[in-house]
Amino acid sequence: MTHNIILTLKVTLIILIEHFSYSHIHDTLHIPLCLIPLCLFPRAHWYLVVICFPGLEQAQHEEWSGPAGVEANRGKRKCQPQASTGPSPEASNPKIKNGAGGTWGASGKPTLRPHNPPACTQDGCQRETIIKKPCILIMDSLKISYHESIYTLLRDYLHVEWEVRRGTRRVFTVDSMKASHCTVPLQDNSSDCGLYLLQYVESFVQNPVVHFDLPLRLERWFPRQQVWRKREEIRSLVMELHGRQGNGGSSCR
Image 1 (cartoon, rainbow, N blue to C red):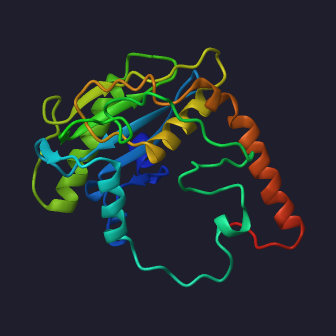
Image 2: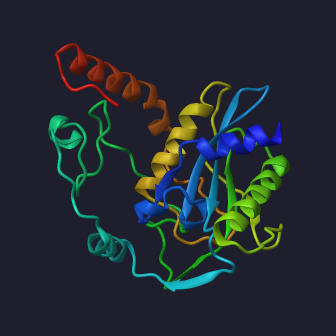
């Protein structure tokens, strides 16, 4: 059972936040933040687990220059563009765009942003220094508090990964790899856990956490209306992709 769960974690979609070397995509320890969707059985409840800075052996303090500094660093580290055989998604879909006007979803409606973003996030942080520390975060829209088995499993996985990749022994303990249940926007029914998981991931990309002083308070990360629109946005995107394929457009791979 444990082996199957670890294998599932290894092949689960890992969303990479911040820049990394593509040659290290197979190595969890080189990924600053790993976002892993998990399903709690037998309740069929989805929630998000975030493994933060597993390659660090202790907390690090860094100067914080605000969102402008982040954008400047991204420009410096940007990878060389690859040759493309067709138009980019942004070019072929005018509804998806970024810029001063915000991000637009597949439904053509702008992404809603809170007026007072959390103080630990990129848009809300007013600190001069921020802290990055190895930790495991849980984002659960049903506020299920018991996740000790998942914490233990992930620490064991990281222990094995470190031994295989680094060739040395490191034990990930409750002190060296702290676990925390984040305060996040919660669902108000019994069916929207998947939508909230998607919104947690989307918010992590649009307005990521930059100051990892646990516990994280993210209840103002996004308005609930943003989640209510998710089904419409997903449906619009699926229908648009279906229409492209039906009209002889390039297929998705």
